[in-house]
Length: 312
Ligand code: MLT
Image (tube, rainbow, N blue to C red):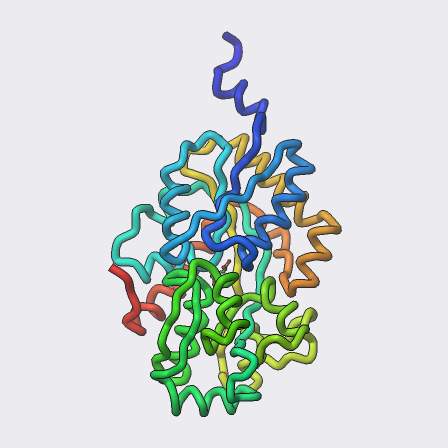
C-alpha cells in the first residue's frame, strides 16, 4: 500500500489511554507533578493519561518495567534525579539509563526542604546540627529508598555533618511524610511539591530550603547554604521518557503535549503554589534531556561513590 502499517498507526496516535508510570507512591511529589501534567495533557491529546504508580527499590523497579515495555507509544515514564543517581547506587540494574529509553522532555524543577517531626528537639538549623551530631545513631532519617532524592538529600546532609543516621526507607515520600506526621521517624528531606502545605500548617519543624537562593513559594524561609551549610544545593529535575524504539512521530507529539501542559494556566498556578519552577524552553527538547541526564550521571556518580553507599 501507499502507507506502511506503522505510519498509519502513528498518525492515529493516541487511539487509547496512555500510561504514565510514576516510580513512587501515590500522593507524593512525583505523583503530584505527573497527575498535574497528565490532567492537562489529557485535554490536548484527547485521550486519558493514566498515572500508574510502580513502586519499589528507589524507583528502579519502575525504570526497569518501562525499559522492557512495548515501545508502542502507550507507555511513558516520569522520573527525577534518581534516573542518574541509581546508576551509581546499584551495582546491578535491570536496565541501562542511557541506552534503554527515548527522551521526551524535561518539565519542572523542584526545591527540597529539610524537616523534622513537630516535637523534634531542635528549633533551628544550628540546633538540628548540634543535636544530630550528638545523637546520630538514634536518629531516624526517612527516605524513599536508594535512588530517591530524599535519600540523596540525606546523603549530602550526612556527608556535610560527618554523621551516619539510621535510614528508614519507604516506597515514596507520601508514606514517609505520614510517618513523620505520626512522629514515627525524626527527619525527612522532601520536595516542596509535598511539604509546603505541611510547613504552612505548622505540622512539621522546618529548617530551610536546599536551593542556592530563597524561593518565591516560601519567601521567608532561609536556604541551608545561607545558614552555614555552604554549597549545599539540591534541585530536583523531572524528565519524561519512553521505552527505546517508541516511534519518533509519537515522541514528537508527546513533546508537544508536554509543552502545551507547561503553558496551561492551571498547571502554572498549581506548580507555583507548590514551589515548582517550569523549566525554560531550552530544556524542553529530547536532546537537552539526554545531555542533562548524562551530565547528572557524571556529577552524582563520584559523590555517591565517595560515600560508599550502594545496593547489590
Ligand atoms: C516521591 O515521589 O515519593 C519522591 O519523589 C521520592 C523521592 O525521591 O524522595
